[in-house]
Length: 284
Image (cartoon, rainbow, N blue to C red; front, side):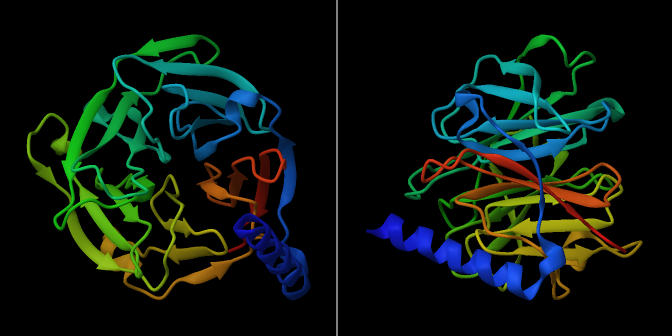
């Protein structure tokens, strides 16, 4: 019964979105046919490889990052060695050691709030994405200051290199910060920065120049513009705008196109609806 009601709610919200913002509908790019990708839970465009983005599945899926082209077709994968996919919830691309571009994977899902510590993995972007790369990632293990949290949103600031995690199940979702230098340290505790006006955040991203930030939940996409000299926390302290979004069956991924002029979303498979990649233009 709950699933039926949830689906009807999504249909009604979708109709409202079409009526209130006809130009805001996303363009269907591709329907994902690979059964291994039915539980997609994050996407992030590559900085080093044109028209390529990274994605992954959650909750017991393969410990692998899949590489798709901008049309949503699988072109490669990166198998992560020595780690498991307990509950991978988001992925990001950002700076790492030596000035290289790194891929970050957030194993931060915790529906029941029972895990004392959670993890973020990172590895440098491979030189050849057409290969089936095998890499052993660095691991950042951390806790939250007030106990376990469920979190499905991660982004990495290209300006400072800081990592930002957004909680999901609290009434007002919370922004936490970690430092790039925290990798390799023990007893790392995420720093709480601010709370938002919304709940149920499922994905986040920051543009590759650091000037635009997105956070989405199941029904809305929130957007901030970051002024020169502002920190991420200062930018997110401003009231957000809402961007066009037609709710998906279970939308848990969002990512900027590298030029920041469009954003993409994708859903997990629900109600026998296959995951579909959508593109939304972002006008200045």
